[in-house]
Length: 202
Image (cartoon, rainbow, N blue to C red; front, side, top):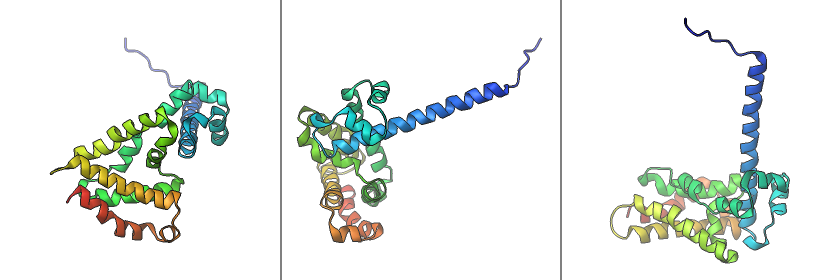
């Protein structure tokens, strides 16, 4: 005798929809907490950042941060990773990578208000946590880029390319150069990308 399948009841469908909505809300909340922590880490020493400050900026309660991340160290371990940022930064064919990287840095500033890569510029503020930032940046960003390059001195060229990008990010987002910010993204990409690309495909 073949098993009989029973169509889902309205209650079952409602329960599934509610569960999906809760998961979606939880992911959105986690993302907001991580954005808040990244923002604060780029502006303050790690030791000076409190969970209360992270919570206030994210629009949540401190106990909710503990629920999702466990404690401050666990939260900032996530924040100090460049893995996702590197994936987005390097998501283009090598011959087009210079333009993509420059555009990515600029759009991070203009559309999201911050460039996650610039966290590395504040590593000296963070004591031992700064060493974690440096190690993560090297392995997840510059070493990963070097692995994609061919020819001589791939490690040096990767560091020069990333250093060039960081200079642009600092001038645009930290020094807030007036002429730079008055220019269009396309104009800056056209002028600056060849400098980056020269290290990628010399």
